[in-house]
Image 1: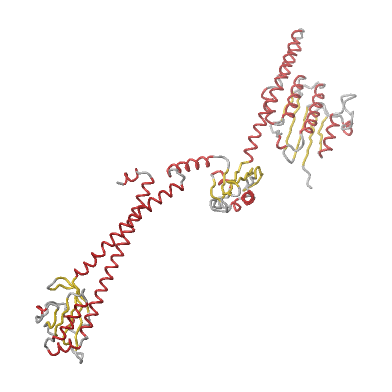
Image 2: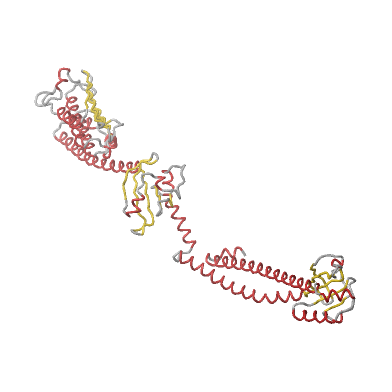
Length: 532
């Protein structure tokens, strides 16, 4: 039976459930009402026969008749009249203290002794009482009352009774009324149950509840699987939905759903969005140690705004993706430059071979091997600013042609979204540092000829280093090294460090030079944000 019920559609299940519940409540209420009505009816009958018995026991003629010991026709006439007045009374009986009948509604029974134990208590001096007993005419409800003379001596008793068939007839008279009420209420229950089901269907806009349930479960799974944090708030600004990613952002100590969004996210603009209906996007915020990019959008259109949707994006993830895209773009630019340089090298080698200068071709090929594709890839990975990266790789190619190894430290970092300085100063400083080092080593006779570039920058600091294994800077030139035209390489030189000095003055940087005669030189330039 249960399996068949579950196999029904949800609408039929609801209809049957509502109808069964209303029918059960209706039957229960009618049963209680009928029981109360029958009990009240019984109480009214008991009260009536008790009152009549008390009235008869107080009649002087009845007391005199019992005291004298002879039936009184006048008393009998009065009792007959009383009996006819109360048509629902079945028996009126008067007996003396010995149980001898002096009056009975059925004359044929007068003069006989009362049979039964129900009168024993009243003859023993008990007060009025009511019993259910069996008489000649069947089961009846009997009220007993003592009759006393003027001296309060017991001279007899009165019994007034109603057959229980009367009460049954009264109950049967109520049944059609209750049956009609039951039928009418069941009919109303059917229409009410049908109306509730139709109302439910209308509220669901024609969708099947199971369909909505499956759709909710699917959407809940999808929303919780998203990497973006999603939080929906109602018109009162309280949270009504939070996905898994947003819960990771909020404090675990606070309940999410039902809480004011401002208590979870104090920097929220939820009230402004609810008031104006204007979305606020792309704000940078920090919440519980998470660096976020937050967008808050209205749900609905003014003036019927239903709430807001807050989207949390992890800034570090976005920056990581941006870095990857920037690195890919830089790598493409680098590969284009590398391809151009490679073709140029092939032309040079071809020229050497065609002119018979085989030794020069061999030397050129050997020096070109100083720049490997792996070195270029690592350089592009560290230097994500395409202009700077192309500059450094070009210098690496030029240095390799001269037999000089130019490399970038693995710890170097230069990203477009973290530039402390504009791109131009980086190009000027790095280009001149490398060019000076290449010129110095190109004239050196040392076996080890290497240049190491370091670039370390973020939004608050920029540190640039350039170290070579040249001959070092003569001590007498150090005080004048930044002056225009001063150089250890001869006349009409000495512009590189001058330009670097100008960049330092413009952007507030500092430079230190570590040099040792015959060992090499290291330039370190530092730019930091000044506190106001």
